Image (cartoon, rainbow, N blue to C red):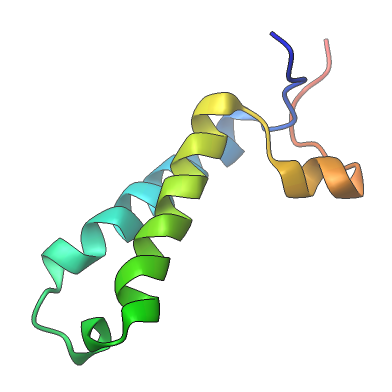
Length: 74
């Protein structure tokens, strides 16, 4: 693969779970006043999508920027 992984298993599972929850929140809590704001209506699911994608790709660009990694080596 062309991307070096920098996310460990636990980090990936947490990102995936939180991401799925954030994607589903507009459907789970559709009557909340929060969803009247376009920033919340679009921003929260987009953040969830980014978390799910980074979990699947096993790579976080922010971790790479700071040289961090939760992935075991070896």
